[in-house]
Image 1 (cartoon, rainbow over the protein chains, first blue to last red):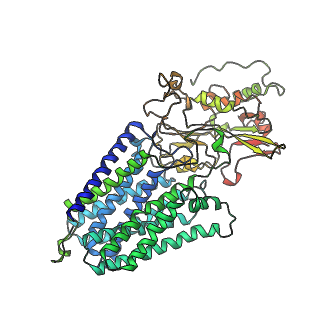
Image 2: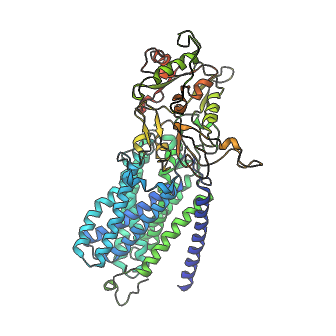
Image 3: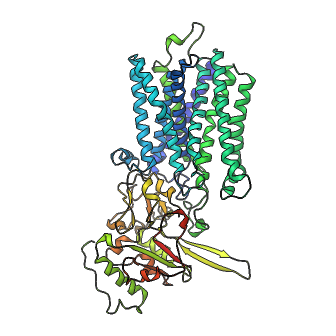
Length: 377
Length: 250
């Protein structure tokens, strides 16, 4: 157990140092080392932002539903889930600010917002949500349960609105047919539930490995949510592809059978859906299987975000445009560069680091919730 | 800059049979005498006359000192048919300066907006570089300035001409050290800095085939007003609902 901790610590340190290199590159070279361009304008970092926003909303909704519906088995996870939500939204904001051309101007979103822009609304919603989490922490500290419950009630629509709005940020662009469907925001909300709940299942397996009923319930929730996600995906792909004749056909086939087919089939479908469901079915009460399933489903969800953000941009708005003026920034091909992955390593390591610090320094585990035979991690 | 005397055109420049560049220059002077909101700048491109020389693309790059990855007016070439029955078509694609521009409402900080004369402007000092407007354009007419230079890896480093000032939107700027327009969305603006000095856009005055026409559609005497009445007039992607101000004669 001790050896495993050292290995995890070493891995974290390596990721963090690599991440710092990425941040240094970003601060000294601007966007020059990134692989996106003027046609594929959003890359890995925007996908990461959407991913972390989903984790944040999902873990908040977990805590909120456990409390509002009074699910005793899941209630001990309230504070860990809220801290996860806070860390995720903070990391999402770091990711999206690093993506800006002028990071120093990011606050002008609050000083001169354009209220017709989904992006302006998202900035406002994230800020309100961040304040709500801070307020919740304050009222929890003051043991004001009435206010905590009230904030949960306010938080539920907010935590549905901001991943949904994040989806709408993409969906409202009529220039991008892949994004421009009413299903996109719904997909983002369901994605938030899947990834957030799965992450909390993984966390629960570490914190309370012996609570078999908690594991069973978490396993069921994750299974149902993955199933809903798959139904939505079936709708998303089968409808435009059914008769084989549609404007979206080539684009969807690129996701399913193009150069990056493995991102969809192996990372998302196999590792993110089939393996987790199989693990949960195999041993529904085991912390090892439910935790691994949750971790896999949550971690691989980045592939789903990438498969929305990138394919939406890889078809020319005008045929022949990429040959009209040859330049590495004026192409419809995109793959994240090493620099982009280094910055991603920074985001992930900061997320894990903050999570760990939270468990070390904050009263995230209510001592009343720890049975004599349990030991909090 | 503003307030400078615009030298007079040669006598007879407003006659219908004069060279088209002179006629358009004369149209331009008349428009400048009107208030900004009464001008309606439009561009008409005759695809039958375009020879695919790319002079407009290059002159635009030279005028606006565009860096790698930024292009305001590419010319899309298409080859039709198979040998021996082949033909080529050329389609210059500036910003459409749409009357219903998808790029404007998406900007989170109102850094891009429609001017009273119809040109869609970018306020480089306000743009945060989120690139939402680039994603929103159905014509891919916006580019992001990554801060690159064509000559950065040549002996002697970046050449002086790449750091010559630009005068886009009437403001002198030098691209350097992540200063705007580096990190901003950039686009064609009909060379508004030239227009206000009584000069035609760079693409229009450079077009060797006299295939690009520019002027004030509110002026019934103008060349563009005449061309807007042609039956073979088209806009790009009318189904997008953007109401472009760039028209094509096919």
